[in-house]
Length: 144
Image 1 (cartoon, rainbow, N blue to C red):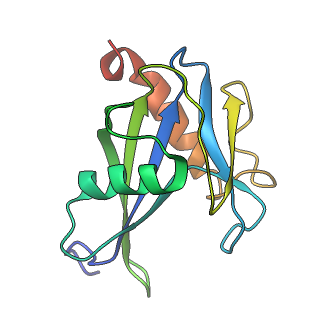
Image 2 (cartoon, rainbow, N blue to C red; image 1 turned 60 degrees about the vertical axis):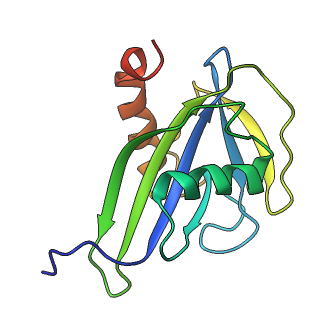
Image 3 (spheres, rainbow, N blue to C red; image 1 turned 120 degrees about the vertical axis):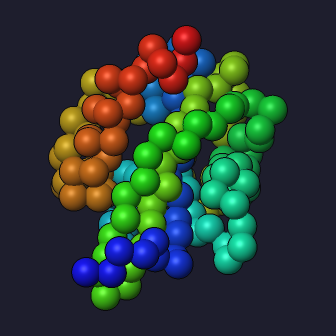
């Protein structure tokens, strides 16, 4: 098994509204997971720092700026497959609710009582549910 960190990187950005009772998701227009809900995010460009990429992708996909939210690098998932990849997961809560705009994918605020493990509606083969469960366990530390 290759133990070095894969060169290809992407990010997922978990955004909560100000009241922290809804999460921002997009409905994917492309594969993989076309038609399913997913966190916003995208590719980390070669030589780009992960947090800079997260803020850039968040702005490009939603119109949310670094003035509106502070992102915390929460976790990484590393896939040592034929197409190795590191997925950096960032999380943040809006300072105040604002309108979001998505040109690439339609955006939705979903309540946190959804079944994010439902692989018929949500991308990632249950990863979204797992990530949100871990974040909920750490909420007091993430959002004092």
